[in-house]
Length: 413
Image (tube, rainbow, N blue to C red):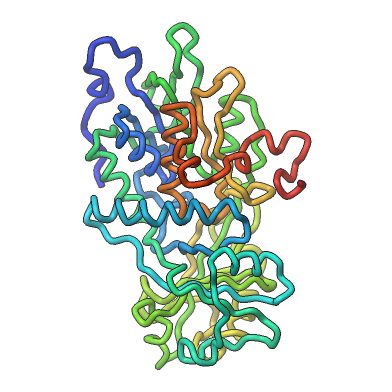
């Protein structure tokens, strides 16, 4: 998708505007693109800035698939997922794109796993006999829970979803600039608002700024405000495995094969065979710490593929081939907080409510991006969280100050 050709000054044609833009969004991954779209939908003049090319593969918003699931151990997330499903559908209808493929959701693991049981309850999933489902693909240890939510899963085409929200944003007047690295954000003391400085030498004045830069969040927040956000980027590998001959259709999305999460050790998740015919994505949830500006692109995290292969050999031995390892490996990043909860908050300090931060989505935020985008846009525009209230989401879980004197955040409570 091409960036808008409108000059930044075009957004400030009305007499009396003190700012070039009402909202400047820094970072055009899925969170920033949804935020820009939500703000423009509410009448804001919006600038969306991206350090790299649009739809680049250097962060956390690229690739062919992300899981959407209702099954969550923590109570704050199911309302966000439910709202996101409606917003995904609305964006698909508005754009004419199709980015979400529905699927059942299978949650499995030891009955002693409290997180699993909470996730099953949150999705109202029902225990199922897997010997009669999906060609008997799963072989599960005795005593394990296997619970299915028939409409609780799904697969999102990640890159296409980002492109969809960017296209909708441009249609609503958002000015997009890629290959424009933000070097600083400062408070405009006399006229109010903020000034965003960029690598091109341009400066943009905005009433508000939203920072959604993924794995670069800690670096940017530190440079802007001297604040240390405990967000650690992880380098993850997306693994695709060959389906054994004769079983391709059984594991395909069109046949109703589920997205699934295995709560054992290791924590493994998967999407049905969809984007690469004859292959299925089965991954380990995690990876080694990394610097987003200096990654070892080949590092899968010390035998991650071997751990996933052993899981496959135990649980899907007749349907997925592990000989020779995964057929395809793709690099991605998680931005992990210590408690795996998001950061959605005003930056505070000298910036007060003029800068909003959305970060630390910890490998599970993509599915909720339309919800998060609406929340961030409304925080920037109105100084409050109308969507969060409407959706029944308590944003106290996502405050920056939860880490003050408590490095584990919500996990330490």
